[in-house]
Amino acid sequence: MLQVSTTIALAALSIAAALCIVRMARGGSLPDRVVALDSLLVIVVIGLAVLAARTGESLYLDIMVVASLLGFTGTTLVSTFVERRGAR
Amino acid sequence: MIEVLASILILAGAGLALIAAIGLQRFGDVFARMHVATKPASLGMALALTGAVLAMAGVGHTTKLILVILFQYLTAPISAHLIGRATFRAGTEMHPDTNFDELASRIKPRPRQSN
Amino acid sequence: MRRTVTAIVWLTAIWVALWEDVTWANVLSGLLIAVLITRKIKVVPPRVSHGFRPKAFLVLAAYFIRELVRASMIIAWEVVTPGDRINPAVVSIRLRTRSPFIATTVANLNSLTPGTLTLELDEETWTLFIHVLHLESIQASRRAIHHLEALVMAAFPRRGVVVPGAEREEVA
Image (cartoon, rainbow over all chains, first blue to last red; front, side):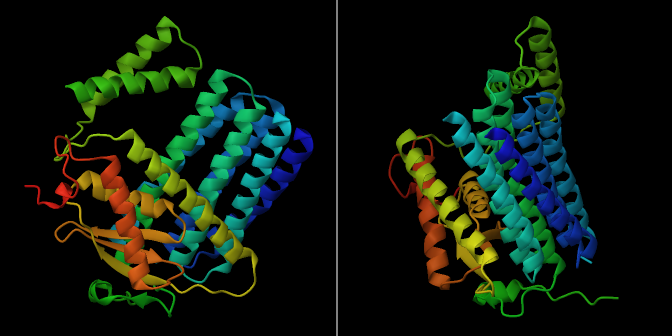
C-alpha cells in the first residue's frame, strides 16, 4: 500500500520539480526564478519526507531539515538583492 | 488503517505540490505565480509530512517532521513578503488588468525602463 | 533576561530534538551553542507586551485553518480548470492596531492565506498593502483583514488592559 502510494507521489513530485526547473530557466524576471527555486525546495523537502516514509531510513529526515533551513536563507538573500538592484 | 491514512495524506501533499508547479507555468505575472506556487505547496508539505509522521514510528522522527512543518509555516510568509515587497518596489510589470485602490495607485511604482 | 533564558531553553530543546537522543553531551553542547547564539544576536524587546487568551486563540486558529484549506482549494481549482478568472488588485487597508506585534502577525497570516499576499506595511500610517488574486470588492477585502485583525487582537490582548478596543490607542 505504502509502496504504491509513495511511487505515485514520487512520480508526481518529479514532474513538479521539472516544471519548476523549466520556470527557473525561462524566468521572465529574477523574482520569477526566486519563486520557482522556493517551490523547488519545498518539493525536494516533500520528496525527502516521502522517501523516508517509504524506506524507513532516517538519514533522509536529516537531509530534509537541512534543505528546509537552507531554502529560507537563500530566498532572504536573493530578495534583499532584488530590492537593492531592481528586478530584471 | 494508519497506512491507508498515511498514503492518502502523502498523495494529497504530492498532488498539491504538482498543482503548484503547474500554476507556475500557467499564470501571467509574478504576483499571481507567487499566490499559486508558494501557498498550496506549503499546505501540501504539511499534509505529506503528516503522512510521513504516520508512516514512520519513533519520537525522534516525529519531532523532526513537526519541526520542519513549523519552520515552513514560520518562514513561508516572511519569504513571500520579502519577495513580494522587493518585486513591488522594483516596479515589476503587473497583470494589465490589475485594479488599484486610491492609496495604492498613489504609491504604485513606475515600471523600470528595461535596457 | 527572562527572554534570553527562554530562548536558551528553546534552542537547547530543538538541538536535542534534532539529535533524537537525550544525553549529557547533547544537552551540554546544545546549551553552549544556545548561549553563544543569544550572546551574538540581541533580541530587541517588544515595544508593547501582549498577553495570551487560549480560547480566543483557538477561535483564531480555527478561522485561519478553515481559510487556509478553503482558499487553497479555490486556487488549486483555478489551476486545474482551463481559462482564467483572476481579477488581481492591490488594496490598502488602514489597520486599527498600533502594536507592531499585532501588525506583524496580521501581515504574516494574511500572506499565508492563499489568494492574498502582503506587499508592504507603511509604519507611519499603519497601512497594509495587499495583493489580491480574486478581487470580489475592495470593501470585502478590507472587511476580511479587519476581521482577522480583530481575532488576533482578541487572542493576544495588550497586557494589563482588559477593555476591548483599547489596542486602538496610540503607543508612544
